[in-house]
Image 1 (cartoon, helix red, strand yellow):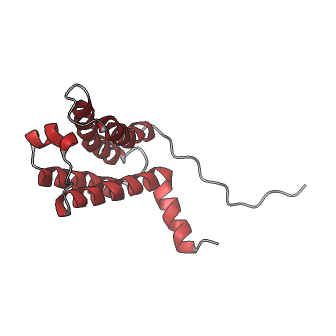
Image 2 (cartoon, rainbow, N blue to C red; image 1 turned 60 degrees about the vertical axis):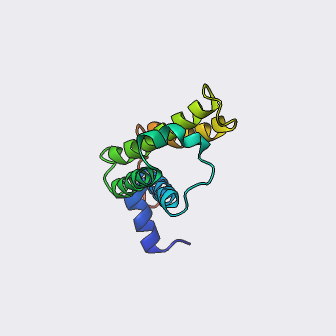
Amino acid sequence: MRSAAARQLSRRLGRRGALLTMKGTIATLYGYGQIAQPPSDQRGLCLLLKAMPLEAWGGAWMAAGITALICAWLPPRRDWPGYLAVWAITTPWAMSYLAAWWPLGEYPRGWVAALIFGAFGAVCLVAIGWEEPPRARTEPPREN
């Protein structure tokens, strides 16, 4: 049985906010990981690293994640900057890995990473259009 605080929190966040909270947490921690422990294999990041150093990309991931975490608490339909921030940071990563696979041929498994980053961002594009479902009735059913 959920506590009253948990019920109130889930009601306040809603499904859209819960999704943004998850996406924001993942993006923030991924960005931190890029700064704290940069990956040893950076073949798929060749195009990204020409634009900015990995530390800057890590900061961008963290900024997108924090934006999503803040926007999770906004009312539905005003939370769109959080979804857009997560999508905007995943797209260059997906494209970089895709280009490293084909046409550059530098990273044979680049298509896998491109698929993962692309799907992570695409969920945001789908969810940005979702309506928050109506709240369940709290009144007891009528007896006949």
